Length: 135
Image 1 (cartoon, rainbow, N blue to C red):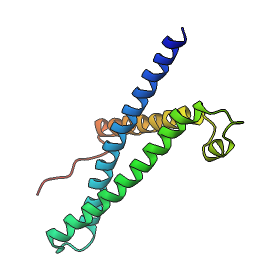
Image 2: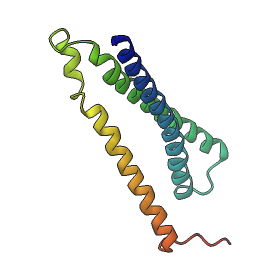
Image 3: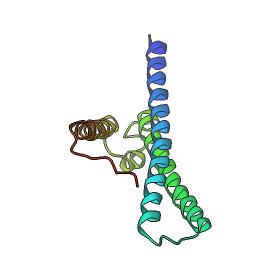
């Protein structure tokens, strides 16, 4: 019974790690493209292509570093923290918020993301957000 429970916990943990990894890759690519697009469009229009590429690479490296840091912090929070009791490693439990937030925060984020996407799609379908006219 313990082996089956451990197996289920391991499967859930692997699912969350994989989901978080996929989300971090998507987020880093989306932010790098979106922010670079904003900077390219609203700064100097005569900027050279090599400086735009350098800016994109730098921004991509920063976003990737933040995503990797967040991924390892969340992974340690969810997978490593339950292995030690608070009495055994109080310094480890002091670094992280309560474990209940490990589920609440992604849930809140996903609900917010879903609500934003649904409202945007609703506005587009209602015609409140118009498409850009091609020149």
